[in-house]
Length: 223
Image (cartoon, rainbow, N blue to C red):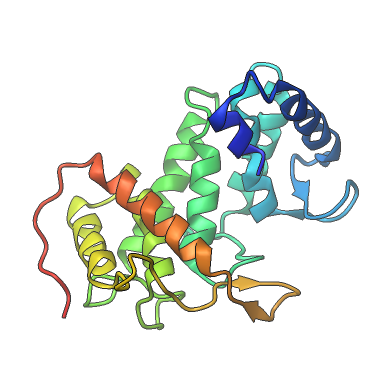
């Protein structure tokens, strides 16, 4: 929730934001990773991806952010994915990592970030189903949340046609009330899945907003 007051009114909420920054800075581990719970616990890639909360204070926390970004880069697996941790979907882990790596442009890690991003996007481009959507894994049927989580990564570096087909899939699966429904994707206590319905709405709307910035080719609506 750190990003909410930052986005709404950073001046008005400067007190809570400053305290949040101090807290985050204090729990970072010596390897640059952030734990799920308290300082000293094992670092977690998903939690470390939360460094985007510190991006507005990049100058003040430059060393901490560089360490966290290196941790994320070192955690990438050979196939372009990341440990899923709190999620079931590969696209969720990729999205969280790439958003973190691209939160602070122009760093000395730029070349490594480009290679890692290309590898992750290649993984996503190898995964879409014939209906234009993504599943939680390569062998799973498409679902709205996994598809929505793939779109921002593809919109940043990927194939516009793949984004266009994914958007068509999402729009075709909107509920009559305007929301979006998907399979459970969160896991905790791991590995037990639980449903967090509003996450699908959030991710889908974010995906559609990211895609709207691209000049997309037309894609047929999936049947």
